[in-house]
Length: 265
Image 1: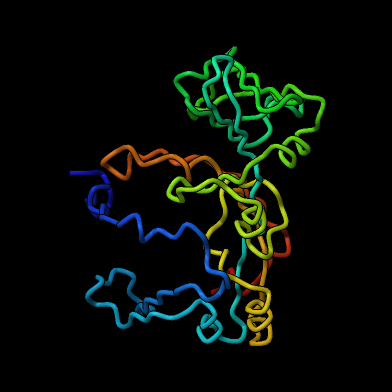
Image 2: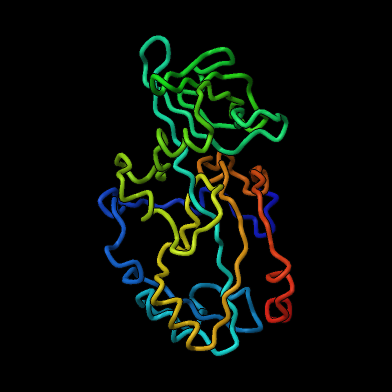
């Protein structure tokens, strides 16, 4: 038994997905991707799959027909940082440092919270040489199994990321990042840098699709939710209720918070 409200276990959600079914590159046209539409009863959220009134297979661009005038579309304006740094330890072994966010406990803009690999080898005091003008020094461990690091360089942290950073593609995309990923792994409305992974639900929107939604009378409002390290952390427990969720930073503007259509829908 588990303490989950419905008694479910993590293993109940396991399934086999053939590696060749995982796309290594996105659709050339964003809104040409597939869209699964599942109908539901307005009054009953407990319906089983067999009781769902409707399942439709559409293209993402067909979403326009699913909205009604006066509906509100809430988008996440967070932008992915190309903050994956590849380097080598003093032994010559390959290592990587994924910058997560500036440390909230330091006034030094070069001190960041990070994830490192291999974690068992990169203890406090070790260094990773990324380039002649950049070394990363491991300062301490963090409660979330990460590291506190210092960027040893004359560059600003922003310049480090722009010059030496790689796009942190998800682990299931088995390829190195490429220059095109710097924009393709962003939503078309991404404005606020801070995520270490893309808010993937929004990757399929195009500017044309957003314009069509606006013409239909759909209001678009924005918030910012920076995707954090939880997206790289597997669920390691059988009871879903025991899984520790990592906190993420967010910001909701007064305009978005005051949108009456959202609060009354």
